[in-house]
Length: 409
Image (cartoon, rainbow, N blue to C red; front, side, top):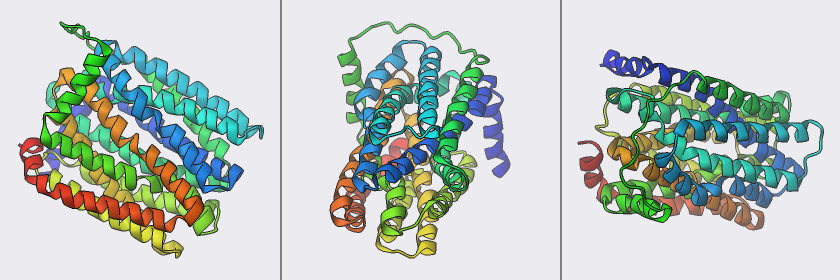
């Protein structure tokens, strides 16, 4: 069985375009998440305010909600490779500017706000391109394995990147973590030179932007199981994921510690994500993934409630390890099921909505939790968030059979 699963992965990487893309993109993803933690830590060092940590995280994520659906339409209309290269060159420029400001001690909270917003806008534009380009890189029979591994790589980087950044910040400075990100963009831009995509056939009917976006929403709404998965992962992103963006505030305000404790928490979460990624890389079928998503969501909820309620560092680190594992399993499995269940001509629009909701929702979560944390401390806002997510999970349990029939058939 294991040999067969690895055979599917080997087959995906036998596609030259995909192998080159993943080689550059995996490094770039780690750099991106390294910079995101560095920016959060800089926000805390400059302001010493839970609110400002939340605000900086908000402007970095919020553009996903408003901009990503527009670029989802463009991803279905225009050349995805050209759009990807332009977006990544601009993100590289942003990273180098931020590096120089930090390195020469010129960074203020206002500059951090502007640059975080710029990075958020660029990332929002890039997400639907990143998600929809995979079918253009592999043979059709390799799409399931390629989509799954791409999701694994993204979600492992989401935890492993901050883990590496925590270590780098502890032994050096946030500037070095940001520089790694800037250089990593250069690698993926070079990789695109060696990737040759097949010519896409032009869509027969060219509709308005509004009509195309409306079609994307309609596609999700007319499939109850797909809508249920959207709702579940959006609620998880809104209430559970913000803790990963607020670790800097937790370390400073709750644990009254510094870079070493931040490195410990991020490394624990990253290790859990890596183990989850290894497990999911061997999954060659969709059967049982809905059940796993529901169970891992419950585990992540209890980890959040526990982490927010204690001040013992080693227990908190253990909870972050389990949290990293559970949240990665749930996110990767859900994204894989969604990618495998949608029609190709709707892929850019539906996946842009997926990115807008599941990656944009933490923007509202961190802003609200940061504001409440500044007033009441970080424990109760996160415990209440965990309770809200658990209630939603219970309500959606009634849709599990419908989701299994839609996603696993």
